[in-house]
Image 1 (cartoon, rainbow, N blue to C red):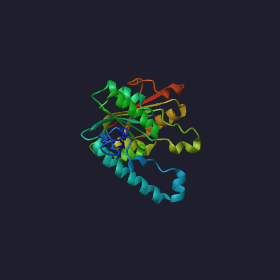
Image 2: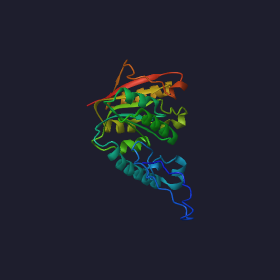
Image 3: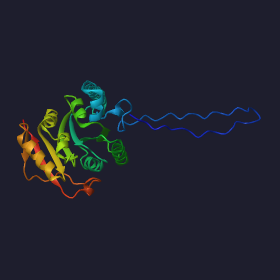
Image 4: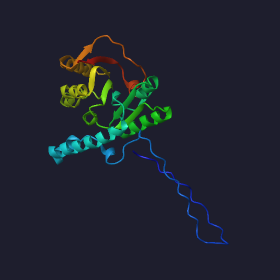
Length: 251
C-alpha cells in the first residue's frame, strides 16, 4: 500500500542571541495509508509477462514470475477482501466510472475492480476516495492472476466485463479473455446463480463470446435480460454500439 509523504516546511533560525544553530523542523509522521491504493513493490509489479519477455527469458522464467505474482497477490487479498465472501467483480475497470457509480447505488454489495494500467487504477481510486465508498476496492492486477489468487471463501456473486479489448485481428484472437479456460476460472470462483454480464461494441467479439458461453457446460446464456445498471463511462463514450450478453453459473 502506498502512502504520501508529508513534511513540514523548514523553520527559521533560532534566537541568535542564544544559538547560531538552526532549529530542525519537527517531523510530521505519515498517516496510516488506506488499503485502497496502488500496491507497493513487489506488488506494484503484478503485470503479465509480455510475449517478447517470455521469448527471451524462457517459459520457465515466465511461469515462475507468474507464480510469484499470484502468491503475493493472495497475501494481499487476505487483507483486502477479509470477511467478504460475496464479491461484485469488474474485470477491466478502466477509470472506475462504472463501478464507482454502481457501488454508490448498491452499498449492500462489496465491489472489486481490477485493471492492468496504473494510471487507470489511480483514477479509479480517486473516485473511490472522493465518494467515500467503503464498499469499493480498486487494485492493479492481471485478470487470471487475480482469479487464481482468490481464496476458496472469496466467491464472485456478480461479474461484469465491459468493453474488453476485442483483439480484432485473427492472429491476435488467442489473447481475448473469453475462452474455455477463463470461463472455467470464473466458474471455479462463482456460485450457482452467479451472473456474468458482458458488454462490447465489437460484433465479432460478441459472437465469439456467445459461442463460448453456449458451448461451456458451467454457464447458461439468458436471452433478453436488461442490463442491470447504466452509467456512461470514459470508454463507452467512444463506442458506437452496445452488445450485451448475460450468462448464469449452473449448479
